[in-house]
Image 1: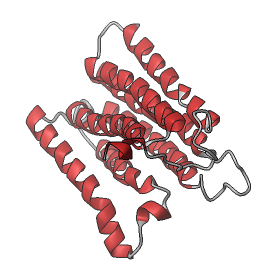
Image 2: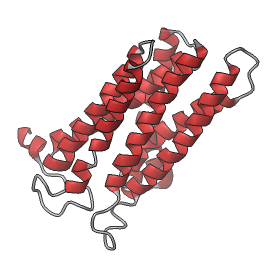
Image 3: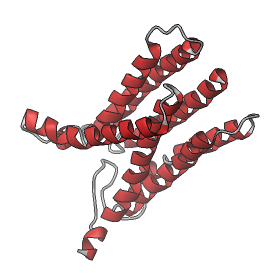
Length: 234
């Protein structure tokens, strides 16, 4: 069983051998997450008000980049966990923050809603597999795992954009519009992730590195939207 943790994984177009630098573009493109992390932390630090949850998300962006770098260099089973766990933590952490900050939910209701979202995400892929009779992971090159995040982002944006007469209405509408643009960028980045293997015959580098760069922009935009909303709603 211990040997399974070191089983090689060849999941992306750029990789042609098990070497450490077999995916140089995919590996180095994770610098975008480090840049996004530094930008978020810098924006918060120069503000008059601290924002602990946003700082945590900013730090988590760096962990996402480092974990993904490990996976795209070592390309073994344990490094896959280093890749996916920080991403999952960011997604669910942001859902929790959005429920608390944008909609004013208490800690317990927000935690319960986040757990419900996690359960939905866990069951969505098997449900789609049963519905289609095919492996949606194979069909989407693994991108189906991010479908719950897109749905959650769209749902939060829709909730913020509904007509509201309260004092926070303008700030919520502004955040909702920002999240819609970020959702569009997320869809584009996810499309590039999905096409990586399909485009391999004509573009050997693949498109996964573009997913990294654009997705770093998504994480930066999400966190910055939460920071700006807190300032406007203060």
